[in-house]
Length: 114
Image (cartoon, rainbow, N blue to C red; front, side):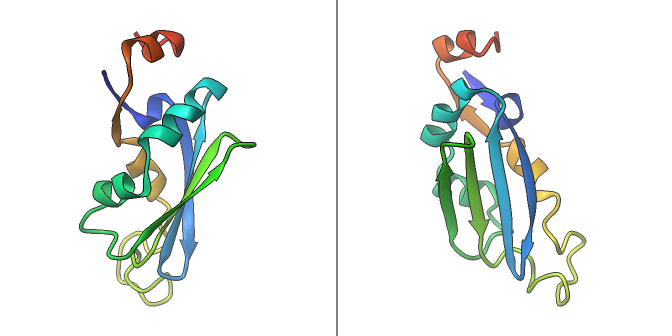
Protein backbone atom coordinates (compact mmCIF):
# COMPACT_ATOMS: atom_id res chain seq x y z
CA UNK A 1 0.00 0.00 0.00
CA UNK A 2 1.10 3.59 -0.55
CA UNK A 3 1.37 5.95 2.42
CA UNK A 4 2.62 9.47 2.85
CA UNK A 5 5.70 9.89 4.99
CA UNK A 6 3.58 12.06 7.31
CA UNK A 7 2.00 8.82 8.61
CA UNK A 8 5.44 7.47 9.62
CA UNK A 9 7.60 10.47 10.48
CA UNK A 10 7.88 14.11 11.29
CA UNK A 11 10.46 16.45 9.82
CA UNK A 12 12.39 19.68 10.29
CA UNK A 13 14.26 21.70 7.72
CA UNK A 14 16.47 24.72 7.33
CA UNK A 15 19.38 26.03 5.34
CA UNK A 16 23.11 26.29 5.09
CA UNK A 17 23.81 28.64 2.23
CA UNK A 18 22.39 27.14 -0.97
CA UNK A 19 21.83 23.72 0.68
CA UNK A 20 18.54 22.70 2.27
CA UNK A 21 18.92 20.46 5.31
CA UNK A 22 15.95 18.15 5.98
CA UNK A 23 15.69 15.84 8.97
CA UNK A 24 13.17 12.97 8.81
CA UNK A 25 12.42 11.42 12.21
CA UNK A 26 10.43 8.19 12.66
CA UNK A 27 7.34 8.55 14.81
CA UNK A 28 7.87 4.99 16.11
CA UNK A 29 10.93 2.76 16.30
CA UNK A 30 9.24 0.25 13.97
CA UNK A 31 9.01 2.87 11.22
CA UNK A 32 12.73 3.64 11.06
CA UNK A 33 13.77 0.53 9.03
CA UNK A 34 11.03 1.35 6.53
CA UNK A 35 12.37 4.90 6.15
CA UNK A 36 15.89 3.55 5.64
CA UNK A 37 14.65 1.12 2.99
CA UNK A 38 12.29 3.45 1.10
CA UNK A 39 13.63 7.00 1.41
CA UNK A 40 16.87 7.10 -0.55
CA UNK A 41 18.75 10.16 -1.68
CA UNK A 42 17.69 9.38 -5.24
CA UNK A 43 14.00 9.26 -4.28
CA UNK A 44 14.29 12.54 -2.40
CA UNK A 45 16.03 14.12 -5.41
CA UNK A 46 13.18 12.92 -7.65
CA UNK A 47 10.58 14.23 -5.19
CA UNK A 48 12.23 17.67 -5.32
CA UNK A 49 12.82 17.66 -9.10
CA UNK A 50 12.80 21.17 -10.46
CA UNK A 51 13.86 22.54 -7.07
CA UNK A 52 16.99 20.56 -6.17
CA UNK A 53 19.60 21.16 -8.85
CA UNK A 54 22.52 19.49 -7.07
CA UNK A 55 23.21 16.20 -5.35
CA UNK A 56 21.24 14.83 -2.42
CA UNK A 57 23.25 13.30 0.43
CA UNK A 58 21.63 10.99 2.99
CA UNK A 59 22.93 10.39 6.50
CA UNK A 60 21.53 7.66 8.74
CA UNK A 61 21.13 8.36 12.47
CA UNK A 62 19.85 5.05 13.88
CA UNK A 63 20.31 6.13 17.50
CA UNK A 64 17.76 8.90 16.82
CA UNK A 65 15.57 6.92 14.43
CA UNK A 66 16.23 9.60 11.84
CA UNK A 67 17.57 10.32 8.38
CA UNK A 68 19.15 13.63 7.42
CA UNK A 69 19.24 14.88 3.85
CA UNK A 70 21.32 17.65 2.33
CA UNK A 71 19.78 18.98 -0.88
CA UNK A 72 22.56 20.89 -2.59
CA UNK A 73 21.82 23.81 -4.92
CA UNK A 74 18.20 24.03 -3.81
CA UNK A 75 17.78 27.55 -2.42
CA UNK A 76 18.59 29.86 -5.30
CA UNK A 77 21.94 30.84 -3.84
CA UNK A 78 20.90 30.97 -0.19
CA UNK A 79 19.00 33.25 2.16
CA UNK A 80 20.89 36.46 1.48
CA UNK A 81 21.04 36.01 -2.31
CA UNK A 82 17.85 34.20 -3.24
CA UNK A 83 14.63 35.68 -4.53
CA UNK A 84 12.76 32.49 -3.61
CA UNK A 85 9.79 32.83 -1.27
CA UNK A 86 11.34 30.19 1.02
CA UNK A 87 15.04 31.00 0.74
CA UNK A 88 15.75 29.27 4.08
CA UNK A 89 14.10 25.97 3.09
CA UNK A 90 11.65 25.93 6.01
CA UNK A 91 8.87 24.36 3.92
CA UNK A 92 11.04 21.52 2.59
CA UNK A 93 10.13 19.39 5.62
CA UNK A 94 6.41 19.61 4.86
CA UNK A 95 7.07 18.90 1.20
CA UNK A 96 9.07 15.78 2.04
CA UNK A 97 6.32 14.49 4.36
CA UNK A 98 3.98 14.49 1.35
CA UNK A 99 6.19 11.95 -0.46
CA UNK A 100 4.49 8.56 -0.84
CA UNK A 101 6.26 5.27 -0.24
CA UNK A 102 5.23 1.62 -0.52
CA UNK A 103 4.80 -0.51 2.58
CA UNK A 104 3.48 -4.03 2.92
CA UNK A 105 0.07 -4.82 4.41
CA UNK A 106 1.87 -6.48 7.32
CA UNK A 107 3.91 -3.33 8.01
CA UNK A 108 0.73 -1.24 7.81
CA UNK A 109 -0.94 -3.52 10.37
CA UNK A 110 2.05 -3.34 12.73
CA UNK A 111 2.01 0.45 12.48
CA UNK A 112 -1.79 0.51 12.82
CA UNK A 113 -2.24 2.32 9.50
CA UNK A 114 -5.17 0.19 8.27
